[in-house]
Length: 368
Image (cartoon, rainbow, N blue to C red; front, side):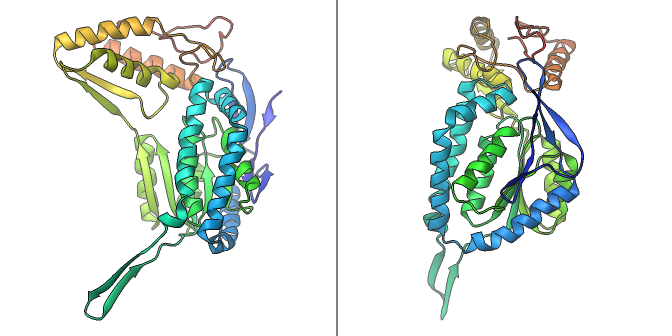
């Protein structure tokens, strides 16, 4: 049965008015498991208006009271951590163990934000000039927004939302439409923790929803994580509309392996970076540069043995080292990149193209 998902606006699930939907797949089987509505301008503006109204009262709460909401939220998430991890795993394709890590890294930022009574303290300088004292105060901006990617559907929304809420802002989240169920459930848990309705709204959507958040003057600031071209576009557009913006794009990490490095440790790090979460994370190492041919040959030999031992399985397999990619497009992109390497003269030591997992022939699995 295909689930019908919603937006979350004003503390309620809403179907939206655009009439547009996207399919949410089960990466293990390739089957559609849910449909998510895609917000148009009207839906997104409704979420912004609702957030603006709710923020006025939320900002009047003192920091200690806001922090208590975060602490209650932490306990609620802890109470259903396993079910959240399994829900995340079922939509994204990362293993349940990786999904637990996704949640944990997000919760650590919520824990930090719960210290907001101390973090919001201002500064005072006595007699900065003759007869002049200087002091600073910190206060909320108003309505702020987060545009988050598919690869960490719990961690990155919580990274964005928790500090914003703790500071007295209202937050409009536009998560990835590929795996929206966990962000929606987290919004429900914030409401259960005592967050007033409308202070956290979730709108699912694509470019039209994003453009509305960028252009609407009621949105004071936004954060983004995703690809470099889109990060550049969002930053430029936000700046052109007078907004503060924090945009993280690409995260193409490099590893330089020196001749005196511990090659076993380097190989383990590369395996984790390349294959953990099927490589769909910004901690992946896109480029490894061994210094010297001897170092390169020794490192490749270690990698080859470790890769051969990796276990590929469905995301709920506790013995799997990694599961499927999030979509067929993502799988085809991996094959395409490997093909580019071959065309440019790369000699493949391992080749995961064309892999099929028995019993999951239509799943989005890449081989090792």
